[in-house]
Each structure stands twice: as C-alpha cells, then as structure tokens.
Image 1 (cartoon, chains in turn cyan, orange):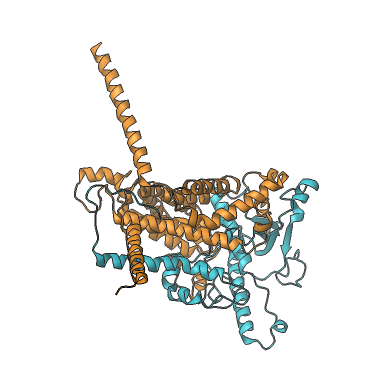
Image 2 (cartoon, helix red, strand yellow; image 1 turned 90 degrees about the vertical axis):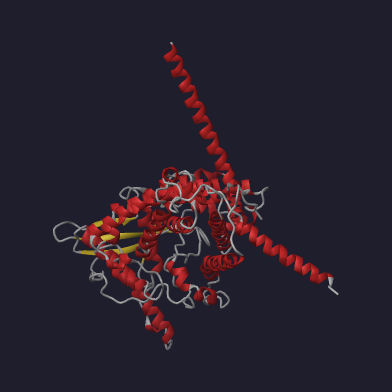
Amino acid sequence: MVHSQELADSPPSLSNRNKWLISLLVAIHVLAVVAEPLRFFSRSSRGTSPATDPLRLALAPYVEFAYLNHGYFFFAPEPGPSHLMECRLKFDDRPDGKLIFPDRRNQWPRLLYHRHFMLAEFLHQLHVPPYDASLAPGDTRLALDWRADRQRFESVRDSMQSHVASRYAATRVQIVRLEHRLPSSEEVFDMQVALDAPTLYIPLPDAPLAEPLNEMDGSPVIPPPGSTRLPSVGGPPFRTDAASPSIAEEVKP
Amino acid sequence: VIKPTEVGAKAWLRELVEGWDHFWFTPRQPHTLAVIRIFCGGMLAYVHLVWACVVNDYMGPNAWVTADVVRQLHRNDWGWSWLWYVENPSLLFVHQLIAVAVSLMMMVGCLTRISTAVAWWLTLMVCHRLTGALFGLDQVVVMLSTYLMFSRCGSVLSVDAWLRNRFPGRRLFPAESPSISNNVATRLIQLHLCVIYLFGGLSKMRGEMWFDGSAMWYTAVNYEYQSMDITWLGQFPFLIAALTAGTIFWETFYCALVWPRLTRPLTLLAALFVHGGIALALGMVTFGTIMIVANMAFIEPRFFLSLKSRVSRKTVVGSKSHRNISGARSIK
C-alpha cells in the first residue's frame, strides 16, 4: 500500500459517521467501475455469466449515465483488421463518385480522422446479415433478436448514407463495409506488399451469399433519418445475445 | 478465556480498518491533481474545439448518426443527453464554444470548482450524443474530470490561487493545504487506472497473438492507425515477441506493481513508453497523452511541490540578480 503525502500543519479531519458514509459511496462507485468490464469479460457465445449480471443490473442507472460502461478491451482479444466505409455516390448531373472513411488525406486533424475511423468500426460492429427464416426455424426468440439487431444496423447505416448524400449533394449513396486485412511479415518483407495495397482491402457483403458488390442498382433507397424504430443497443444488462456489442464499448482504442 | 485465534482475528480486523482509513482519509496536497487538471482541461478544450468545427456533420439534422437514431439506440439504457433534442447548428456551435471556454477555465484554474463540474457535464452530454464516434480518449477525459471536480485541484497553479490572495476567506477559492477530498480523488483515479489495465490485460489473454508474440507486429502494420512506419521491427522477431510479452505482462500486473515503492517507477516508466509509443507510432497522440497524464496520479505531490519551489527559487534569484544589475547601472 502506498503511504500518502505527509501531513502539513493542522490536517482536516472527518467524523467517523462521515467516513462511513464516504466509504460506502466510494465502495459503490468502485463496484460500478468494475461492473461493466467484469460483465464484458465474462461474455461468451452462450451469453454472460450469471455471477456478473446482478451487479451490473443493480448499478445500471449509475454505470450508464456516468459513462462507465466500458470493457477496456483495447487491441483485444487480438489486434484485428481495420474496417472502413466505402461510400458509392450517384449523381444526376455528374459521374458516379466514391469516398472512403476514414481517409487520412481528407480528415484533419488526426482526432477527426479517428472519429471517422470509429464510425466505420461502429457500423461494422453492428452489422448483422438480413434475417433468413430458414436459419431460425421455429425459434421465435432467435428470430426476434435477429430482426431487432438487423433493424438497428439498418437504421445506423441508413442514417450514415443519408448524411453522405446530403453532405455531397448525391441522389443516392450506398455504404459498403471494407475490411483492411493485416499483412504477415512474409508478405511485407518477402513479397513487398505495401500496407495500403489494394489487394488487402476486402469488400464485405451484406449477406453471406449476397450479389456482387459493384452494382449500385441493388442498393437500398435512402430513407429519411429516424424513420424506423430501433431496439436498444445496450439493452438490459442481463441480455444473453452475446453477439451484440455494448453501445458504449469500442474494442478499438 | 480469549483464544489466540480470536485475538489474531481482532488485530487483523483492526489493521484492516486502519489501513482503509489511512488509504482513503489521509489528507493530500493538491499539486498532482492540479497538474492533471491543467492537462485534462487543455485536452477537453481541444476535443470540444474539434467537435465545434464539425458540429453539423456530427450533431446537426443530417448528422452521421442522427439524434433520433441515437435516442432509439439508448432507448433501454440510462444514457441521456440534452443534445438529443437540439439539432440547430447555431445552438450546437454555441454549446461547443461554451464547452471550450469552461474547459479552458478548468485548465487555467479559474473558478475551478464550477468550471470543472460544468466541463464534465458538457462532455458527458456530448458523449451520450455521439455514440459510435467515441474511443478511449473520451472514456479517460470523462473519468479524470469526474474525480477532479470533487477535489481542490484549483487551489494551486491556478487563477483561483491568485484570486484567493485578493479575496481571502471565500469558499470558492480553497486554501492550498492538504485535504481528504484530494486524497479520495487521487485514490479513485489510481484504482480506476488499475481496473483499466487489469481488464486490458485479461482481455488480451483471450487471444492467441498476445501469446505467440505476433500481436505487436499486427499492431504495427495496421495502416489505419499507423502514423510512423515501425514495420522495420518485423526484421527482429525476437524484439517483436519480447515487446508483445512485455506489454501483456505490464498491463495485467500494473495493478500490483504500481503500488510498491520499489516497482512503481519502473511501472510508470513502462506506461510512458507504451503510451508514448501509441501516441507517436499509432496516431493517437490525444489518447496516448491523456493516459500518461492519468498515470501522473501515482506521482506524490511532494515531487511537484519541490519542482515548484525550485522554479520559484530560480525566479527569485533571477529577479534579485536583475535588480542588482539594474541597481549597479543606476549607481554608475
């Protein structure tokens, strides 16, 4: 234990009652700090641990409002590939265009670039393929969760498409998620693959067996922002859908 | 007859209570917190300034994630922001200007008790509005400002200290003396940091790359993060693996190694290297800097006190010699 700063003259003191009160508040706060990473850490494909849920549930109002709901999984469990957004823009009076977010040449200062990067990662984290009834036969709970998660993804994606369309005066925008694969040391040193080589960028399909992505015609019509009702991302802490990311959690630092 | 075990248990319990009392309720000087306040206020001002420049893109009616979508994302949780109900770009811009102003006031220590609380609140409102665009930087600045607002961090190295001399006896300008609130705030920053590093380390144990020694390579070749080319590290696989192992060891055991006097300097030095590396090579100057600042909570106030007295001694000596020179000139 660390010994504190030596006391100067006439140190202030607290009554025992106040000490107990402060101790109680401090203990509750420290539990709130630990509650979310504990729950986050105990997640698996089967859900979260029943041992961590009650604490998180009891402290939910404080944890969530005070912005303490973080798992602190920085570069974890592994430093994975980056995810970007490729925005394909269609204009009435100009040739089609393309924008990439994040783009370090166009977004400055670096903090702003990083904000765009986080948006792209956020969209990727939310992604759920379109609902397929053949994969959830008779499982109402799975079907409901699947639809709700997909609706959440679509609402965020549509909001982003709508933003790009209005920002660049485009008639239609389609956002395609790109994965930037990380090259091995053999690729970099022996095969001389550049870190930004086009071959490392893989367009991610919306559905596992989706149509090729270089078609604009199949893209959804941009709805007005907020036209759909969304399920909560955070949801009640005892939710068992482990695949859903926590709303305030960014795995990327 | 009192059994020896009973005596031992009582003594253990008494020691526990005394240890708790000593840990939380020993008054502490405000100097470390004042330095953290200066950096945290400056960082908050910068963060809000950047938001102010793109207020329409991120909070306006056609934002990346509109207020309506964010409101529905948070429908079943307790996150709330008044910015969910404001989409007027001019109002949002004024909001951000106020946030920049109070953050600067926090930095210079002007009406610190009020400005720190207001800066915390405005940052919290922005965080709950900008779901999806946030990262570690936001988590740490909110964490620091939460604890700073309960302390007397504005009593030194501040405008308040100057005002206190002009208007003595005001509660708004607390005296430069050790206080329990300073200690509680410092302890909470320290414990919060331990939680961050512990779970940062434990979470890495779920992956293979942190164990086979390749994680540092795959971090270095992440083009979207990269701000300095450090791929040359890959020429030295042993170095890459050693850095990987060192990082996960340091992060996991930070919560134990940072407390003893013997290992604390090394642990903090490692923090400086890790976060300095993140700031320089991985393009996150803001996040790297604020983590280094947060680690300052483990530096005893007497270090900054001695630094301050050394600086003021030099200033006094400097002004005395200047006076002597000008005096000699006037004699001539």
